[in-house]
Image (tube, rainbow, N blue to C red):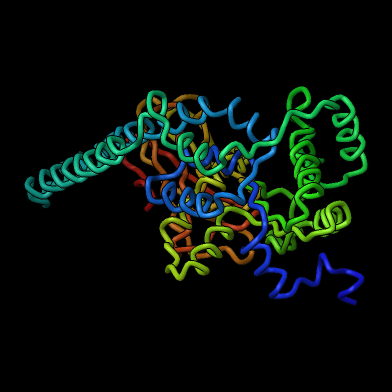
Length: 398
């Protein structure tokens, strides 16, 4: 059977030959994610890519998408630091009402509320300082882009040429999309010819493989089902159609990895211990790249002093955490106290931490995240119940 399906029944020799002699290629988001990662993750992945110097090649499509999106990703990544300040303000606003309530209890010494408020302010200042330190170590990519410099050195000019038959390739991408031939048929909603991006990259990789006659290693950030075989929300392996097409077109095998798995294998082969923090950062960035949450809010009761109801969250893919946001309609008279609980969730949901807060009169947030390291929240439906009351009432959920 192996001689009929060599692209499927890979041997240890096939694997070793691909890693020792094959060509590494990556998609644009693998490169763009280098701007999204923290310093340790960026260094780890850049080092893994650089280890293939002399056997590293990227398609014109990859380089083109990288150039088109690079500046936006840099600016978006920089804005992440600013988001933390909004969260600090939210923490202070949501805690003030509770601290004031403690202060109003005659039996509790005044020093308790003062110490609590002081400890919270000190903790926030410490967190701000840590974030400021991390921000100061982030390179100034606009003026001195180390990522581009290192990639240029590693690539040494090994970038594919712009295809001359682009119109024909887009027509072929359209046909494959209609017939649901991977990859890329799930990108139908992209503007213009954006739906063709994955196929253009794939076609250019196959053409290069024909010419080089060497095994290929493709690292992609894609997680959709037009790249991966999935069952019960779990990724099993690359689509068999891709493995077969690559072998039939090039005469060689192709290994397809997501970034996390690629780095794991690289570290194992280098005799390095896997850095769980680095792998967790890769998972976080990957899961946050595209919105995964759809929310439907239902009111039990709503006026300007009390609001209660349910929020139904439809999670389209596994994530480490998510936030369900709701609105007060009508607006509350003052920022209320709010509580929330999880009524139901998909099977295999790990232990979770749930927190509800608000510092406004018009909306609120319920935050859920996995309380178990390395485990994520499975896709499916989550049903939450909440109650918000002005004045005395429920306290923020923790």
